[in-house]
Image (cartoon, rainbow, N blue to C red; front, side, top):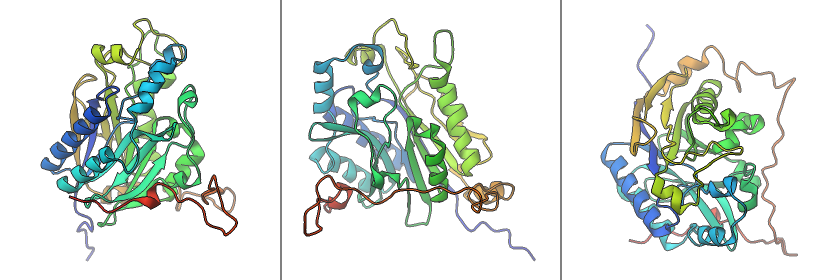
Length: 343
């Protein structure tokens, strides 16, 4: 007799749609902690945040000439790994007893990175990564990730594999294939706020392409549950972030709204989505990981539906320190220097 009992209990996952506390590090940390607390109270086990939720995505750089004063304010309100603000978020995750993938602008000296920290229910930073290739004008503001950032997945104490990518990393086929090969089961897609398709909106960067096409395709192609985690913006926020009232150029930048949060099943079915592009909420779905096995019975792109004898991928994953001493020692990465949390 066939045993049809699920080997994995249903888990509850949550995708954040919310407005950043623009250019205000402490307010952004406080809001992040409040969202984490809310998610924990609602039974969420895995929570994902938008791209650079702290201190907010700087669309000013797409729509206006370089502004050194704006960039300076952005630098000063970006978060340093290991700082009191960072550890406040770690404590919030620990107190909520959940897993969280937190997106923020990371500052190291004068350099910024589009970062994601994977934090476990004990408040430990299990993995910290940076976007490998800032997109288009982002290269003016942010540095690039390195070899250690090719790791995009971690496993939980329940042997659930959580993975995360930032924004247009979803447009990089080789990175996605490597992501799938790490066994992603719950995927966090961190996005900024984006306009829905319409007149004058570049289709390639619209909410529909980014969410309903690119992230949804990751769910189907990779055979995983995929969460779109997107920001929103208000007219007041646009004023703070110097987003012009007359927009143009390559980015689908709204003056107001811009949320497109959703959760997709491996089949591509929509399990949950935000009320509209303006709402602030944690979008929640209860998912059965056995649905991944059901989906992959037909096609598993890194398993029975692959031809590694014909096509393979080489990945450089050995960190290259900026300074290496003659005795072979070097300065460790930020993730390796995490200290235990203190109450």
